Amino acid sequence: MKNPMKVLILNDHVVGHLRQCEAVYHYLLEYDRRRQAPRGVELESLELNTKFQSGFLRRAVFGFMHPRRDACEGCDHCVMMATSPGDYRRLLAADADVVVTPFGKRTTLIARWLARRRGAKSVVLMKPQDFSDRYDLVVVPRHDAVEPRPNMVVTEGAPNAVRLRALGPAATKLRDEAGRSDVYRIGLLLGGDYKRFRMRREKIQTLVGQLVEAAGLLSAELFITTSRRTPHPVEEILKSSFSNSPACKLLVIANEANRPEVVPAVLSVCRLALVSPESVSMISEAATSDAHVLVYEDDGFLDDKHKLFLSNLRDKGFVHTAPPERLCQKILEISRLGIKDRFLDDGKVVLEGLSRIL
Image (cartoon, rainbow, N blue to C red; front, side, top):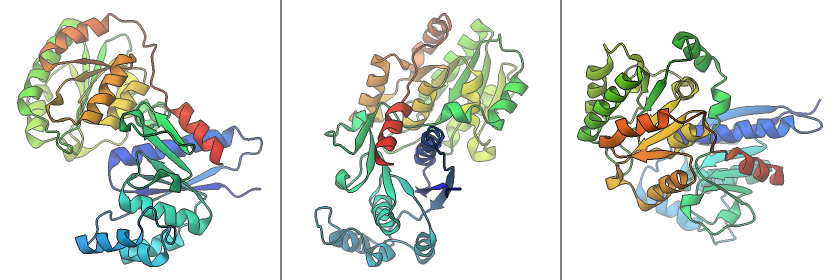
């Protein structure tokens, strides 16, 4: 029997990045299933401390590892300086056929070094901060607007495995708890502060009022979840508005009692997902699911690339958008639509890219 393919994820502690890396693992499972002689796939995830202890050390390491310098592709000494002693020992012991990492100077540096050391393939998600021809496969979202290269695949959103995760026990449990399926169900997926974006209290208060009005008109059930980035004042608004609401069948405050796999579970039971605008990963998961997607507009603090991402998905029919004060009207319009027939499916292009390098 052949040894299974070993996949190593370099985890930078960002949940959205980890979900994208796990999606690549699921694509590799699909690739293996299609082989004439499947090997099986094993997954390992290493959580790394992604911050240097000092700016001087960061400049020293990347001065030696300048992207165009052929003499240094990442030696043991550079990686040892760039990691903690514990991380370095775990990396030396790690075995992999495929190394998957999100963007970031340290994680991509380590991925390149480890792939060369183990004779493995390197897969980098999102635009690397050095030259992408150093990696076997680079998965880049369209809004990064990079020049295509032979080792690159371009996606519309963030890779995800939300459809497979919707088949898991968490989603099955929520479907069983929800019961009858003829009720119109709306999911609210809230992220939070991210980079320059700030989730503003007044926007959420308006959103909540519009959502309550729409739910009343539709006799809808609500399934609500926050993230660890959600500001405390926003959490308090949700708790005061929905804790005792008969219409609210699920309220998860992630910073108080997180529920694993709650996002794919909510997406699997709801016909409409109302999503905050700052999370590429969460919007991509919703657009991949069977639920219609409505993103509330709040672009005052979003960068141009993020606005391009949202407008691209809206123009292609993957999501709807509306300002908070018009959400009720938009929800009613979407409720009259039939079964969703346009899905974001980045898995195909990523799978094609993986097939080229394996």
